Image (cartoon, rainbow, N blue to C red; front, top):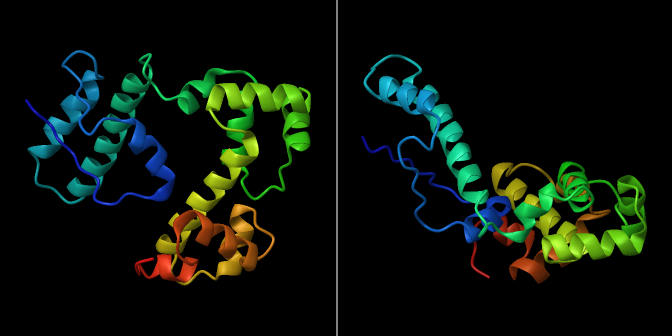
Length: 191
């Protein structure tokens, strides 16, 4: 049996992962959780209300399992492997979970229980870029996705949600990163 699934949209937050993963990832029988594959096969054969929702969730679960398996290989990107580092991993989780927080290297170091120099060195070695560079990229990716997912949200609200003090600072950083204003990005206008 061959099961395939596609995801039609790509967000900026997922771009880092998608850049690391080959265009085709396969999972051989026996390497993926058999209950998920069995549930998918059973659901595909049914024609009942809610089938599409169930299939979507099962495919999501299967995708996560296959990606985890692929990412556990030695060729996994540094930022993924960094999650296993007690210092860099904790810092990554803090930055990803609380992007709106006014993080500094000193504040992040304090939150992870190490010195600023130790945090900067461990994070950069593990992730491949300094913590504040990672945070800026993460915040802008979140903002890009929010612009398209919530077309009625104000730039001020999005700026606050992703950790920028004003829509002007977000707009300046966004244009530097994406080559167009947040408004043009939201409307899918070319740069």
